[in-house]
Structure formats: C-alpha cells, structure tokens
Image 1: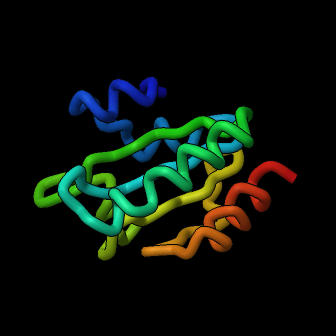
Image 2: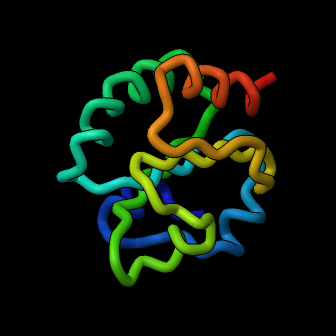
Length: 108
C-alpha cells in the first residue's frame, strides 16, 4: 500500500491495494482547488491528530483518475472510511459531526 505522500505525488493506490489494507483507513478524495475540500481540511487534520491509529490517504481526484470512479465519487470532499479494506461509511461534503462519526465507526 502506498504511503500518503505517494498518493499526493501522483502514485494512486490500486483498488486491490486498498482491499488488502489492514486496520482503519481514511481515503479522502478531493481537489486542491476545491473550496469545500479546503474548508474541511482543518477538521480532518484535527481528527487525524486525535485518531492517530487511522491511516490517511489523500487522493487528488479528477478526470482520468480511476480510483474515484471505483468508489462512485461525484462530490468533493468525499471521505471513504474503511476497516480492513471494507467500506464502513462513505460521506460526500460531510459536516464536521459526520466526519467525527466516520472516525468513530472505524476505530471502535
């Protein structure tokens, strides 16, 4: 499984890599220019600091990026909360409380 920096540098994980990942993972689909993504970034960062056991993989999504299509991403930010490679919860343009619930769902 690629490290979070790999995804930010253009190395997108494959669906198979994600399915075989153990533990809690947050896949964050978005775009650097997206105002909704920018607004949610501080809350996600705060929760990642609180839930240190969650692995974070940020995917710069857009045309031609296949992983987002695998998860039927249509709105950003789109957060996919996984545990042991299985989707537990998926949220599009979530509120801060929904994001917290997603973190709790994969860590309890």
